[in-house]
Image (cartoon, rainbow, N blue to C red; front, side, top):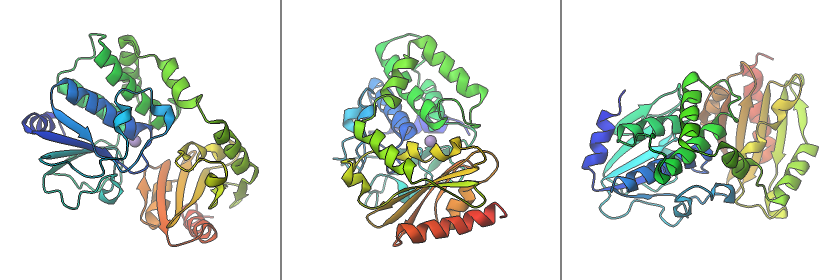
Length: 325
Ligand SMILES: [Mn+2]
């Protein structure tokens, strides 16, 4: 895999749309904004395609205001769409049904379906932002000059890295992850400001929601699995309908003896399950049983047409099997 073919496609494209996975997380947002800033700087006509909006704690990132949910499909004359951090074609936060141009797929999920015309899937990258950083270097931005644009791109890259590694704590972190982070701090990226903006910036009600979810946490399957639930109506009660709750998924891992933490969130057409694993349990396999995907230690699945009780039963059955309990 190399970036040459991608670079060539970018250079010869007239209009480039960028997209990512639905309900974008810090890595999806960071990699799309890093690339958007870079492409604009290089004079390419480029824009974001997204059905989603993003939460306020990402608003410190340059051009984040362009992720406004108003461009759900490719604009006229788009000849290239680059999708970042998205393993499955049906999870792309874009309506591509009537699009006939090229798609480049840049990702780090092991379950990636290779739906692109070019697929750059590096499962050893802790975050898609690592790949974005390397691609942007290939495009000619050196990250040596401490310019505003380099720092803007660097802050976006750093955001994806810290969010996808749990602030450098997960086992997906490699020496390359730290090398890139080191380079970015040398460049002038304010790592402390990024952390504060991302994590110490919650709406008061979000903390109260966390309290409510935590007070109902359950331990099951020999106390090795923690289950957290956001039943229908709870987000409305706290006035948090569009708030990202993915940070709650891993909370159960803080408990002694727990191997898997699972968050169940009841949505309009079913239940979203997010699974996090502490050591050896492969939660991606569990998510895949019901059509989901992700990584060994972090995976997600959408169970359509079921309520939260049924979803819990289904996922616990699959977990029981995977954990040989
Ligand atoms: Mn990612």
